[in-house]
Image (cartoon, rainbow, N blue to C red; front, top):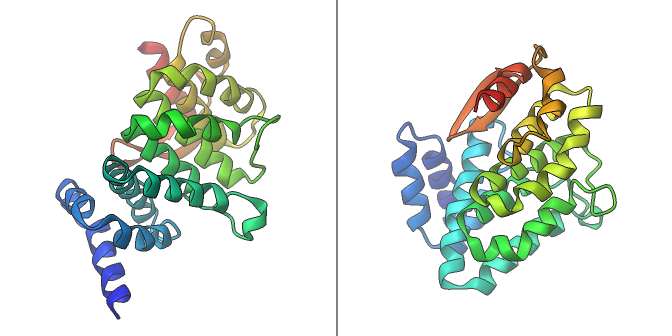
Length: 223
């Protein structure tokens, strides 16, 4: 019953209209208690709840790492296990959560950023499932914005999704992923997508935003 009550409490905070206050409340809860409900809510039917679970996981685990680094590493390894074929699951929300945690904690980024990048590397731990590829690309963009030192390595493996993907979500998220590494050499890769009218939904600044691939490209090239 205590677990059910806690999960209901966490869900209520993720659905709160006052998200900033709710996130602060989640981050102040005992990390070891709140992590398990958050793992479950990464699979919730409402997209905004799932994304807020990602944000909350980032805040909670980064705070835990400041106090108990090894406990935070165990959670990172749990995400990695969820993405392993042997786990028997899919690992929804795992790449995004890993990225959010590392965006918030430099120490964990130093240890695990190469793992996240490897999920987009055909010669590494490449994830074949398109849904997981979406999560990895979003994660590379999130991490690249917070940790510019990893942006260029991340962009290298996002580029093939710009060039080859017929999926507008993957292509749009690849634009998001290369944005932090944008330079004159990358501009020719984006120019052909200026007129791409296909739409996607992306989580930016704590909000789910509908946009076109062309919208994302225009913003990057303007910057």
